[in-house]
Image (cartoon, helix red, strand yellow):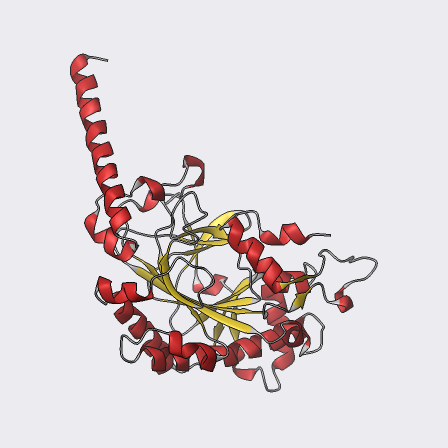
Length: 369
């Protein structure tokens, strides 16, 4: 290579490394990506995924609204219940996720939840950081990425994690700003809890179990929420908002804004699920996979980021209480369908999930018989 070309290459490399080093210095002083993103033109090195694990933004597949199972819950408590239960069983067996319409959550409640979440992440840095913690045992905390103490590569995401049930035990821990935060989030949480209970009952029935089987299996129940904020990313092809993972809980009910980013692994391909107004996306979590003895599968999914628009998603994780004993339903075990999993407490399961950080190898495999 001619000397002039070598020198030009070295100078570009030096410039790139200088930018990365300065970005890393900013990263250290800016714990939240919300604040970091406005100060960098390149993704800092701690966010860059290995070459073998990067999103291929040139080869994306999209699911149209008609391709995703859409379940109308309007007749669930009426004469159409058996038909809806069949649709639910098909969606859980074939996809592991589905959309619900006529879900009973008022539009104004959803709108208030989205708006107050935006307002929170638009607060001054000093106000937001009052809620910051890297302690995963805290039941209300603002943090970044996923598990900053264990993970090798960071994720382009900030999140506000809230425990929501029993509501009266946790609401006093929640942020006091924006002023309507506690009121708006509490009303949303109550509505999502009602929807969760309705879905858990229907999923139980779709497996041929008693309506209250899964309800009882979850013990005292738990309900957590994450308000995920994915700022604009200068190099979205190098990183993820969240890498591929399954959810450790029973079911997840997802509210997302109008910016695409959710991808689901379907038939070996990563497929983008485009947002549809006035719907929730529901996915089966690991605990339902275990209770169903593998009839229903917890699905791998991930979150992409982009350079043009910020994205927000608000998943509610409906889960067992920590002391609940989880295992395959005895009614789903026979000579042809032996038990696939040992029994375990949800605390035992979640501790393993958290300490492994997010991984394509699902945590349920650690509890196989």
